[in-house]
Amino acid sequence: QVQLVESGGGLVQPGGSLRLSCAASGSFFASYTMGWYRQAPGKPRELVAVITSSDSTTYADYVKGRFTVSRDNAKNTMYLQMNSLKPEDTAVYYCNADHAIKGHYWGQGTQVTVSS
Image 1 (cartoon, one colour):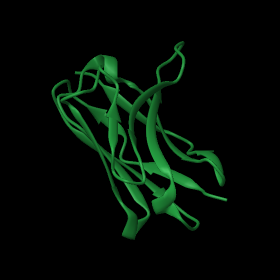
Image 2: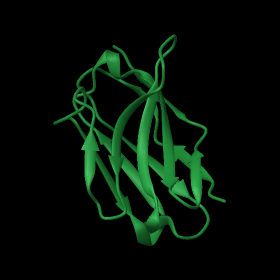
Image 3: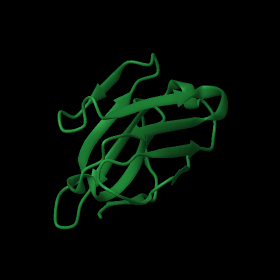
């Protein structure tokens, strides 16, 4: 069983930055593929970025060059550095942990609002 807790969301002006964190409990964090997803009101949940157990990363086109995903296995934590934020980045951001054998887990989400 893995429990995920996101933090770091909030209100930021367009062009600003935020860093989200996802703290994981349980064992074998390093073996999970970790991901960030987001969901805006009235829209489906969408992929933002993924980082594998070997630190390979994948980004959605709409965040490439602006967002950076990273992980610290010693701290059981994944991060999302978000720069040059736009109003369309406003959403609830969710942390995901995925393992072919151990299962698939979601956090409760953290709100990010980009507005002047």
